[in-house]
Length: 294
Image 1 (tube, rainbow, N blue to C red):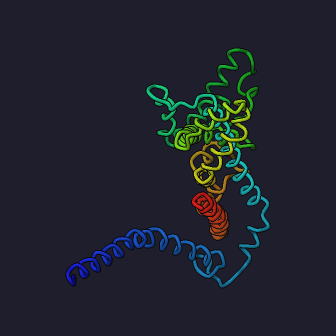
Image 2: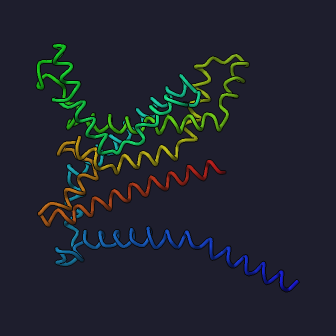
Image 3: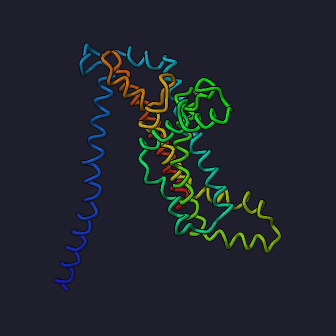
């Protein structure tokens, strides 16, 4: 009995030690570097450390918080992310509604292919396709729909971010479609469709009251994560965006990489504000996950 008790105690200790390894690695590799970088950014923004460490000052924060360019950048970034996720989700819902069978063979290849394209390559494709000298412009000019480059609308490097949204939708649509398809089958929504049909409900009523709300509720957390991915994207807005307004990632990079030393603390402040925004959204996602498991 004593031997078995000792063995069980040793096994419990080993399990506790093993369970602590992932958390410890996460703390060492992620939490500590991120926390150190955030603390350094805060100290730099207040003039306590860095090249401009002339003593505590709130002037850099005042400059950023009163800057209309920074406000436009945040609004443009959030608006672009919302538009991208909304359009991609709407198209994915339409795709699932019109064909709920899992894609196999060649059809699955064309659906999954965009998932393998890097964002930078997708941005180059959009530029070559939709720019004033791109393929669409040349076709329209050959068909006499437009009069040269000047007659073609600005679809890239435009103030509305059309090229950025188009590229993100192109990348997000396959992912969200696969996500919705998997949830459709795992939640056995086809059984609910048959049951609602038996009770006299139309396909439109089923889609509006059961299918769409169920898929959106189940996919809320992954969609929020993809929203955060679009918020922090860099390559696509760098190539397809314009100087004003800029997406947050591009603005931060510009502030930190230019020769004006006064821009460096401003870049750190914008990064801090962006971190706070992302943290708030992650807290929302955690609440959503808790509600799902409740």
